[in-house]
Image (tube, rainbow, N blue to C red; front, side, top):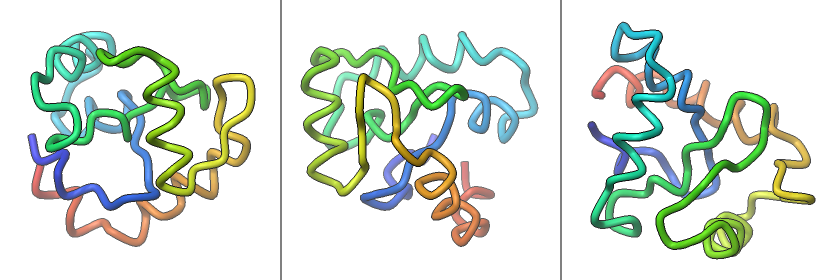
Length: 100
């Protein structure tokens, strides 16, 4: 996977990534991403749940929140305040999406 191509300040959902892999195994995608041994180099913190909640993180949920906030993502109560805005940034990078 090329999670490294996803720019700072943008997020993807587990569902989005599964669809790019021609799969409906959203939880399996989450499990695989959760086993990432290099969470800063391979920015798995930029992958969230489809309902806008940030989901878990190997380094702990507070760390994921802090990293996302430092990247400009607005979060309140472990949920993106404006998930459509953060996900809209993804639409601009359709070419990158095809490289997964």
